[in-house]
Length: 226
Image 1 (tube, rainbow, N blue to C red):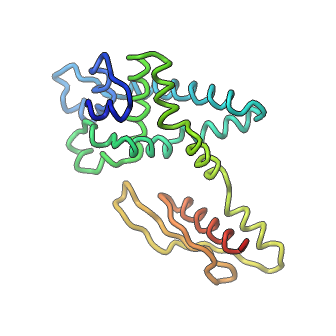
Image 2: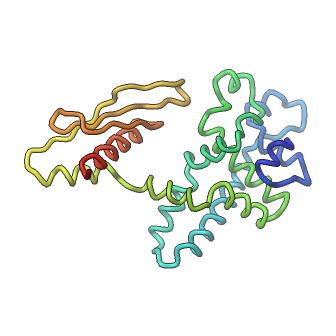
């Protein structure tokens, strides 16, 4: 746990809070004889703490943006994929307590489990050190300039932009096709191509078919603009 605390840059006064944040329900259910609690309640609290800290950050950082834009950016910042990436950066999966089924089923790399654990850790820090400690952690691992750039990237709809570009000429037909996939079911990577009138003009990959198509469209836009 000391190693994880170094990554968090936070030392817990109550180590039990961190242990609870890393305890999946599958593990707690297999050890009902003790007083072990899963991280589900902490996850619930962490979601609210994260939402507040992120909302305050965006409110101050973007004084000219309307409510609708702020809401969309916050949703992208606190989405499951963002939290999963934070967990990967912290190697949170290595510290989780999982039941036998989740352990054998790849739970340490499952997106939803890691995202939930990230929120639970935020809540544990909040309960142990208050909102200032939780805010400092969330800012450090999530709300930096690079992360905002990633969010802005996600908000762009490359497929629509590509469609609008090719429609400037008549009788242009865009199609997408999956050309491969790899990895286990809980962590698949998909590869896609975009074709203009049957000819490939871009390719890309992502953790979902939608992401792969967007990456292919982005690749095509870059090539066409050049």
